[in-house]
Length: 434
Image (cartoon, rainbow, N blue to C red; front, top):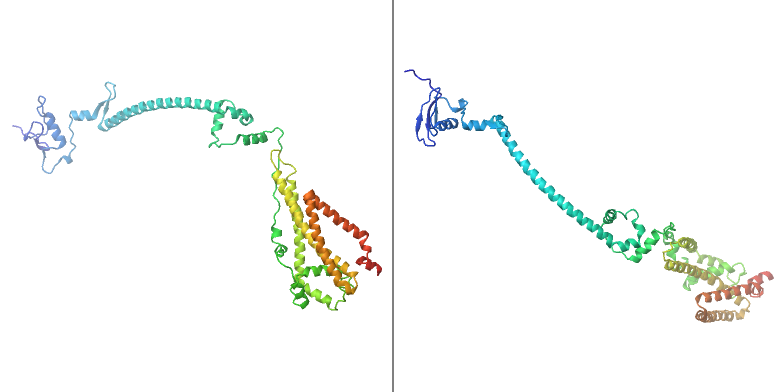
């Protein structure tokens, strides 16, 4: 008997399906045949899975490429290409790709189906939205009828179509409640065919110069000399520094060495004593006050000019009644302050002049009485003048009272120029006689 060529597999032990411990000793070439269930597929699966396979000594399944061409191999490596008869996909890798394509194609079909459903739903929602928006536009148009008809020029370019009007309306954002009367005033101003351009009211200048002025600091202080001579201390004690200074300025040339009030001969050191009362610091303070006065007048004139210029062209709808009243009050206040300053200067010069005139014509032994009589008459005149002014205010008001009082002052000046200068008490008369 011829010995068969041995196979790399010495023995196969089947322990699957209906086989238990069945041993097969294959040769180099083997044919397995039989009916279904005979074990052909079981042997093929055992070889492929290396299950129960005994290899030659020193050999294993890793040393060989084990290929089993069974139905499983056909299913894994041969696949119909779609529905095309006679066209196959070969190879396990290609079949995997085809399977993946098939799955993704199915997934794509599903996504397209869902997409279609979503598009249909979206179009349905869009149609509903368009219907609602159209209803909203009509409602807006109807609701704004009154306001549109009252302010027609505000919708130029947005009246038609309705969608354009509503689109512009929605750009406004948060709605704000307005008073219709105020809107009507603004509308008439903005769309007036005869409208003009008006400048903004200009502010007045700064008061920095006045506030920073040294004269402003001196307003609340008593201006006295820093000299410590007995005469200077006496003048400061009776608070008469300014009174003495003005009297000395007015009568130093006509005094002829005598006091203009009591007519006594002045001591030889009188001028030195007077000069000591008004040192450099006193003169500096006086100069600062005078400069402050000039700056105040200049700045106030500028302020009033700016405020009045603002009134030259005022929009017709603007009520400036209160503004005019305040400007008028400011003008009167400034005039009042300046009047007070002038009254102070006038009082400081007039009282010593009148007192000097009264004392000048009295005999030496009567000068004290003349001085007392003048002071009493002066105070009585103030009291009577106050009473007369009160009566005038009651009858005529403040404005006419000031006019009448001013006329009496003007009459006094005229009487002095015409008659008073020729009276022996006048220093002008004394100078003429000399």
